[in-house]
Length: 272
Ligand SMILES: [Zn+2]
Figure 1 (cartoon, rainbow, N blue to C red):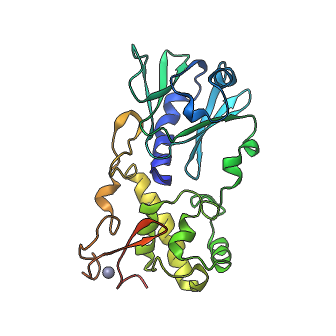
Figure 2 (figure 1 turned 180 degrees about the vertical axis):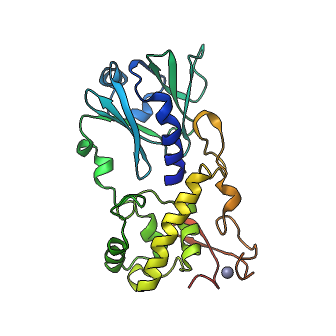
């Protein structure tokens, strides 16, 4: 599933392609993604709107519209975007075409159909965004904030970092990589992280995310950048998917355990 670096990569690629363009028509080929909004309402809410900017909050893409409104997208497992000249016909996984005023088409495609598209008048109207915690690349993600937030929770660090109501944007891959870099066990209760360790976790979170964005995200199976390009950060992972391989720091075999029905990868010797 795309996490913060993958969504940020898509935002940075889409922004110059669609900013300033007006949506002249919308074709919905499968309405699952639209939630309660019918295809006609969705089309009416977008036609004639100009795209002012493309931004991100957690794992959500946000298209700011003029004169008002927002298109909010969550890619879930396999959602992708392409911007192209109008194809003759929709391909199998094309869900929505957004026709733009320069003749191009922004295509939302989604093989598994878990991705969502919603239109709201104001951002506070979006229930999905209202529940989101701190974005780890925002100014608010300070050491002081992190120390305070960790101290109130007994959850294991892995669960805490992946809880979107605490920190928005982390999933299984980056949580593993951040905890390895911070030298912290995924099993450690959040409230038992010391001051120096909190500083390591804060630093590791920013470093891992920024590096992953510089490498355009991680493509292990499904993630594709705009127009089907792959990310490169999969070549720089230290623990995720490395079960039984020697730790790069201490040569102890990387362990794989289950937490909340998901795989956790970590070095039992470096991460305490
Ligand atoms: Zn190690």
